[in-house]
Amino acid sequence: MLKFHFTLTDGDNDPIEFDAGRTSNWKSIDAMASIPDSPHKAAYNDFVWCVIAAEQAGKAKEVGIEGMELAEAAEYIADKYDDVVIDDNTKLLAKEKDAPLASAPAK
Image 1 (cartoon, rainbow, N blue to C red):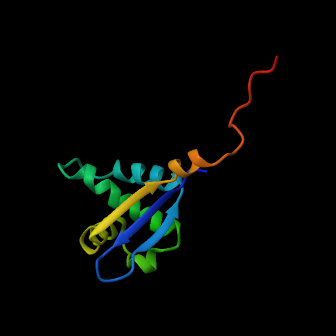
Image 2: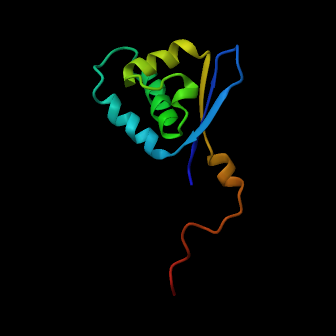
């Protein structure tokens, strides 16, 4: 299963880490559709995605965004954390020796 791993660091405390699935990304794309075009819109997407993923992972309180509206929470994360890293697990999945996703055609 594809998962995304989020790591938020602010330099003063231990990093906050959590995982979220594809739906967090889809929901962030939907949310971004309602945000007016601006020069910074593409950069804003990662922070919106982080908000949705943190809520999905049950980490909103730990991240400090519990009860905030989406825009407020995204701005909080952008201003609070020095680094927001979003990784996926595709490299890990490629190393695993799982059964193939599809079998050969029947003869």
